[in-house]
Length: 274
Image (cartoon, rainbow, N blue to C red; front, side, top):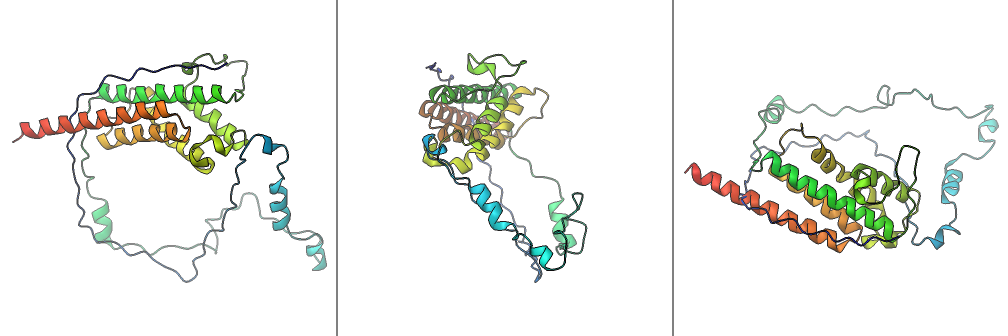
């Protein structure tokens, strides 16, 4: 069943920001190099499935990779050993001879880092921040609902979960979990995502989780203006990778109106202190 739902754009926000620039005169601290330093081993590349039909005849590359990295049978026995030695399961890789310690920075450099943190501008009220984050949360839930309905992806149900009939039937964290599971199980073909960015899909989803946490927890501390805009931008990236033009346009307008509100309020605040 497909659901076409139009979300009316939110009313424009009053604008007010002022751009605050921070210049840093801290000298760059040179990185420490060590002749015995070892690079991390390269990780295997993930090859996304381009279509659902390809899943049927998809070769099992994981077995090939395991076979290629496993030692040949009888290798240990040829050396007089009954079986290959295994690393202890409780081994702590940070406690042993094969570790490295970086050179400690000068005390003056540490003192510059540990001084009082610079103030970041915060011009939006708590209620205004809540309204912006709630709008992003609701629009992303609608975006995920439409994506799952459009391509008829299955939604697992348990005894304590009711069927999904509208976007609000699942929290944004639950939508993120569902989309991540569909991606890791290769249920989502790369061609359904913007530019086939299947590798970046999970990362983009996870970047939006803080927005849901901030929107639902009223006891959270006040966020600075840049953080609010960053969370809205994270929502735009989710709508973009899901190729939802309507959601992307809505969130982009929300970003512009929120940024303008911040700039206008900062300008008004600066004028009062002149």
